[in-house]
Length: 171
Ligand code: FES
Image (cartoon, rainbow, N blue to C red; front, side):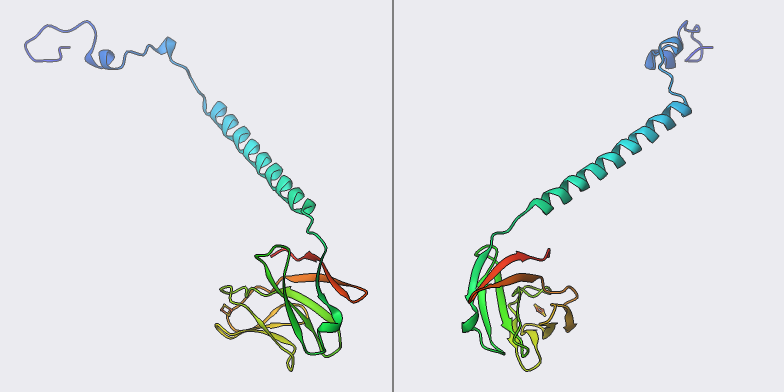
């Protein structure tokens, strides 16, 4: 068969010149081999994901925040509050003393859009003036307004008259 009418047939068809791979040189990949490769690849990726997540959790658990004196207990009256920064100077927090006399501390950064919350002693709530978000001053959970995540609590201990921050909830 000729490539062009009126001409003698060529020995090597045109397509073979364009695709010169010979069958015996071709590398076969069967469906079974491809499936095995994809299965092993998926298993490796899944294992790598589990290892990375475990390493991430382990790193967070090891993160230790320092103990820091944040206020004098005698300077915070019942229904009062005091501001401090913990664990870094870029983390504003608020210490409140409820009507029952207990001291509790929270991040002061509203979980909606990061405005600073203030303490309302009469209702024992933390109020965000930006969009009227309200949090419980007992545990930081959102009560009203747009926030849906609770305020992280700061763990505090009384050491004599010192109020010492010893840890912070994960945000
Ligand atoms: S920033 Fe606090 S309610 Fe929006």
